[in-house]
Length: 128
Image 1 (cartoon, rainbow, N blue to C red):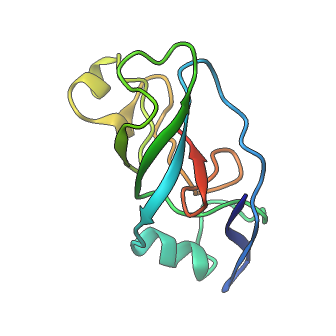
Image 2 (tube, helix red, strand yellow; image 1 turned 120 degrees about the horizontal axis):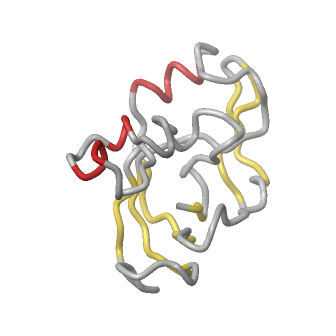
């Protein structure tokens, strides 16, 4: 799978992206159809990112089509078109239920593409 990979300050390259590994049964694989670039992406490019590690896929705003779902996914199906937001939430805690996924009690404000822990969406496919 190809994607845009952070290689260091002012160095993002198109190359072979890390293999997608489901976090749990509630994950899905999405084939990207469009990705956005925002100010946070520019900060990462300029070396003011959230991680100094290299080789991770960048990006955290995209749309695409679900190509595979985990056994615990019930609200989405293969073929559904989805928008991927930057923040990752559990969907069940009070902050998530109030629309504040960036304050999720479970995931603590994790975002796609800000470091190697959660690969970004500027790739052919992404795990969400």
